[in-house]
Length: 307
Image (cartoon, rainbow, N blue to C red; front, side):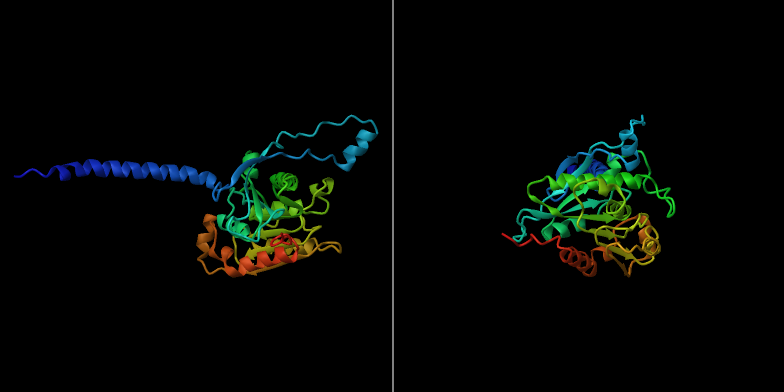
């Protein structure tokens, strides 16, 4: 019997090598995607946002003024906050400094939709995507919280957002009075706490100008000092619209700023939502128009197009 040609005899070895390379590439891709949740794509610049000094409550200030000895505040979790900074897209001829900006807060698994970073940048906004889970890694943020008893981690995230606001306000190319906060999922709950009238923000100089929450987990107070837009997905099992409705009814105060609440229909199978992956409706023209028109109406984009 004739022996196989040299090319055919080498084929099994080539196949094994090819499979091994493919597997190694797959392994690298998988491990890379673990931090792709806090993306460095699109020429983003990794930065560390300094955490603001933790505020002293009115009670602590009164006790100190009275000469009382009080315990120190535990600031061990208030370390630097990993972040990625994106300037407006280079192809956007209308974007000229000082840029309007958005502080982006991810979901509890540290995921923020990459598509929305692109949309915001192409619309002329600078984006600072922060990573609270990497700043405070001691909790499982995707589990354990309830509507009436949200996890205390939400407060740390809100404080991170306020620290990011002050960081951006000190960047020369950013318009300090035109910075919005954009939260996704759990991050939207933290964003709501960052604009709460009686929350951390009252202790600091800078304020967010508006809030956008996409698929918001409404576990925060809603006595907002600036307007907000919440865009929920009907029948969302992770972030039920009913939570937002309950909060809006509960926190309906005379001085509360506008809370605009929109619920969009989802045509995908409900099972797909259990993977916590981005739904097509989130990036639809309807939702993009809702968000960009809202930011424009709030005056966030007033510098875009100006010389």
